[in-house]
Image (tube, rainbow, N blue to C red):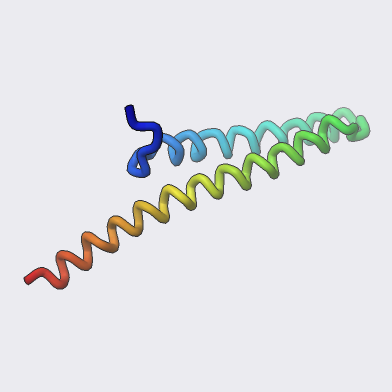
Length: 84
């Protein structure tokens, strides 16, 4: 059983789909409060804090996956260029 596989792209796909949805949800939450002329409470600011943490997590996950992918791609290109 493989617990970790650096070549899987599901992390990139999930983060790429969930980041825009979460960002839009928080923006719409603030817009709804603003349009109703209601003040912002702790829930809105906690949503901003959790969105910030989620963006950091998603960014780090995508960066880690892309870094390993680019490392493999670089090795393949070097093998093709300097092939004997």
